[in-house]
Length: 169
Image (cartoon, rainbow, N blue to C red; front, side, top):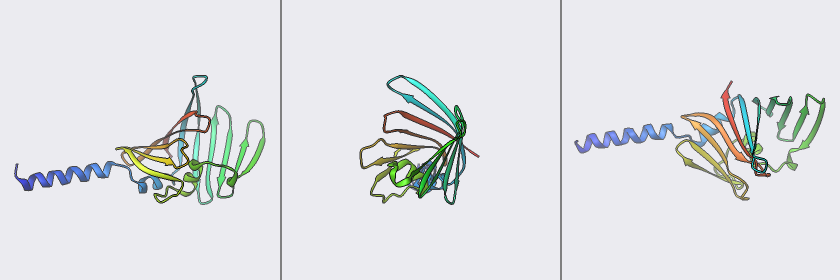
């Protein structure tokens, strides 16, 4: 094989590979779309897997999470507050966002910033962008299938592992 042909093939291979890897731009664009989801959580103490289903809908003010099973709940998140509505019990509660210490919620609200003082962002596998909080809380993995955000995985502050499978609406 001639050196010129080798260089062309190597360049094409690199370009195709680079185009298939998710970028911060892909992630921020994906975090503006609406999704249906299936969320599974594994409680390591009871070794129970729990499942919920619903939708996450983004808008100019923030986002809304509608949970349809196993209980009907709605979470309305803005820059100022989180409104929790338990539809089954007809109850609501409002929490100031400044009282919620969640990099995950703030990332969903504001997008991911590679210059954030609160976390680092890295490509940990060819299809996974990882947020590593500097406070040593658990990582948040954004898993892509090509340029499509397919899942989010993280552990909460109780060390319960969550996997959220996303389907674009």
